[in-house]
Each structure stands twice: as C-alpha cells, then as structure tokens.
Length: 534
Image (cartoon, rainbow, N blue to C red):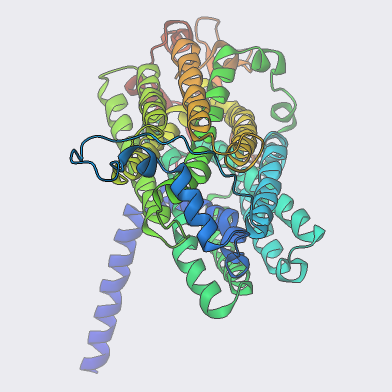
C-alpha cells in the first residue's frame, strides 16, 4: 500500500509538471517548431537529387587534364608563383595562358536539369497557392504540400533519370513553393507582431536542410545506395505530417474565411503598390545571390583553388548551419529594437536589407580578386552566406507589415520573383563556368553583386515596414471615419470565429506615408481588439 501511495503521489507530481510545461509552451511555440522542421524538409528535398547522384559523379576529363585546367586558370599559378631562377621571390610574373574550357560532366548536366525543374516548380506555385490557402486553410495546404513531397520522394526510385523523374521534381518544386506564402498567412494570423522577425527567420531552416542532407544523405548513399535518401525523406515526412496534424491542425482549429474575404483582394492597389514590388525585387536579389554563392562560388573554390567541395565537406555544409543561426539572431535583435522603440519598423527593415545586400555584394565582387591566399575567398564565401541571413527579418517580414490580411499573396509575389532570380542565376552560373563565356568568374560574381546592390537601393528608396492605406480595404460601415482599420484574416473561420479585425489609431495607418510605426502602440491596440488568444 505504501508503494501504491508513492506511485500515486509521483503521478500527481508528473501531472503538475506536465501542466506547467504546457502553460509555458503555447501553440505559437509548437507552430514555430513544426514549421521550422517543415522548411528543413524542404531543403533536404531540394538537394536530395544532387546527393543521390554521387555514385554517377564521373568527370569527362582525366585527372591530368583537370590539373592542367586548374594550373591554367588559377590565380595562384598566374599571380603567385615567382619566376624560376630568380633571386627575388617577391617578383611575380603574370603568364598569358590560353583558357581551357571544362565541359559539364554527365552527372553535373543531370543535376542541373533536375535542379532547374525544381526551380520551375517553385516559380509556378506561390501566387496560386496563396489564393487557394485562403479557401482551404493555410495550415492544411502547408501540411499537404509537405506530404505531397514525401509521397513523390517514394516514387523517385521507380522513375530515376527518366522524364517522369523530371516531372516529379517539378511537382516537388510546386509543393515547396506553396509552403512559403502559406507560412506567411499563418504568421499574420497567429504570431504577435513583436515576435514576427524571429518567426520569419525560421524559414531559413531550408539551409539547415542543406547541411543535413549533405552529411546524412551522403552517408546513406555511400552505405545503402541512392534510393535510401528517397525512403528516408518519405519516412521523415510521414512522421512530421502526423505531428503536424495532431498539434497544429487539430489544436489550432483554423477555420475557413467567409466568401467576402475570399474575393475581395484589391488587385489594382496591390499590383500598383511600389512598396510591394520593392519587397519582391529585394527577394529576387537575395535569391540570385544565394544561388551564385551555392553554385558558382563553390565551383570557383574547387577549380581555381583546389578545395574539396563534396556535399559532406565542411565548406559545403557548415556555412549553411551558420546561416540559420545568424538568421535567428538577426530576428531576435530586430524584434527587440522594434519593441524598445529605438527606431521605427520601416527603419529596422531597411537596416537589415542594407546588411543582407550591400555587405555581401562587396564580398562577392572582391572574391574574384582575392589572389594568392586560398583562405581569403573561403572566408568571404562564409561571411557573405552568413550576412544574407538578415533577409528574412528584413524583406520577408516587410511583406507582412505592408498588408497583414494579404500577407500570403504579397509573399507569393515575392517568392515568385525570387524563383525567377534562382532560374536566372542558375543560367548565368552554368554559362559563365561551362558554356558560351566559360571561365568568366568575375563576370558571374559581378552580376550577382550588381543585383544585390540595385535591388537593395530600390527597397531603401520605396520600401516600407508598415501597413499601407489600401490594406484597410474592408472597413466596417458602422465605424466612424476617424478610426481607420485593417483586417488580419484568420485562416479558416466558422459561425463563431470570423475574420479577426484589429483597430488601429490613425497615426498607425498614416505611417505608410511617414515611413514610421510604433510597435508598442500596435501591440496595445491588438490586445484591446478581441484578438484570438492561442
């Protein structure tokens, strides 16, 4: 009996402990955690075909030809080797050696086709997904998009390197492209504005997925064959979807918006808004730079400086981990700055875009002129990839600031332009390193730097971090005209849960013209406007 009493008391203590943990971990934390894992899965899927092609990675040139290519194109050879039989080792001779073009290997060409197919899928889906999510619910569309990726991954082994494989990669891109605007819709509906930068920064878990598939995927392919990566993705997705359904769909109980909200997006104001296009262009520049860093710079370090850039190499994986944690750090810092009222939200967003664009632009441009020390370009690559992590808390979050009730559509346009940047950068890198103007490293890096610089200038000029005037499109008739409002649409509504409307002071709406926004006042008005508590 004494033992039974001790067990009962222990059970009561455990129940109290679980209750305390549940009180501290609310639905916002669960949503953030599950969303982060979902984006990491997206990164794994994006790079899975490249890792699975490892057994087929056979170069079209011999080791001697490759060594000659490195010798003839390397800055170390041309600028850093002193002339023979010279007593002065500080004098270097620049040799005029003709360029030797290295063709794409069969594995590289296949990888390029599959990667481009995935990018086309990401280009097709975001805008359409943002409108579908309004009808079916953002959380449902996000969950089923990731589930579709897992199911298609299970079909890849049967369709390997056929036209069906390309079709599956396009489908996977469509699914992953749908996750970005739906995540923004959930952010606008369920995340407090004072935590928005941190939440949106979790999207960079895609880069975390790159690192995971680089290490774990290489191990699986090497030891169990290429199909093991596909089955690993399928199993991971099914486990994730179960927990997503259990803790997100069921617990948050999203409701479908009413018919008025579905059809009332102000397309004329939306498409004519300079701030919306500025946000989209800055995402385009960021994606172009990321593609140049991942595809062009790594190959530059391999061919010119002799680095090993396999998928499980430190230089190929570790910087992506740093990118993720740097993004979270930027998000926490900007949320603290906004909450403390040090600067306006618009100023904070522009500062992050400045960090994420101007500094990496300088590093990428200088990278082609670093000369002899191989550590210099490697360090610049790592630093540039880390600094671009400021983009989510800057440009991505701005898409919510502009029109919270249309955050999905705004970010859908941004990610569509971003996918166009990926496709363009993929073409420039391929042609610059293997095609019609092969070997023009500095041209490839210069184009990426110019894209970063120009798109950042556009955002710094006309970008904003506050609600625009047309974002209050649905103003209830009964409200007096001196109380402007904007509506943040919940994803799914029922008879008892409708569109969430938050009253703002007129100064908050006028910040679209002044370029300033008081976050503390915004949070106070949200708390006083019958906001749905999670």
